[in-house]
Length: 107
Image (cartoon, rainbow, N blue to C red; front, side, top):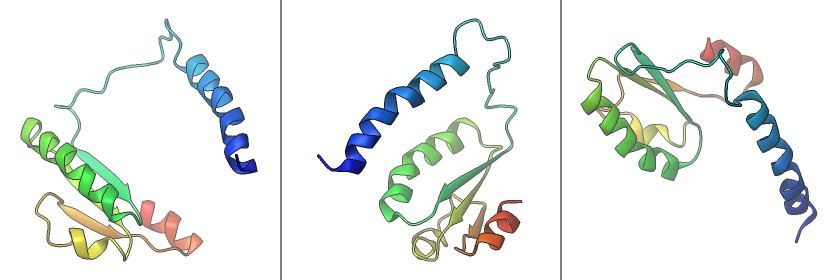
């Protein structure tokens, strides 16, 4: 096993422990998100074409159950041609690799 893979296997339990601690039972700071109150969703898919394709059924189901949703996509120049004419997305933003542009585009 490579060093990176070993490190990942040792780090995972720690990450899960943190999530269990944050989302433990009885935490009163948590609240449900009700789909009929949500108006916008931003989907971030930077490079992987397959990730966009496997996201389509989720988007279709969201649009069917919550027609008021405005679904936007933050896509890279690689994935943009696949999604640019897709009616599932109300808006499509181009994600660039420059560090400064990341923050500007997200905001």
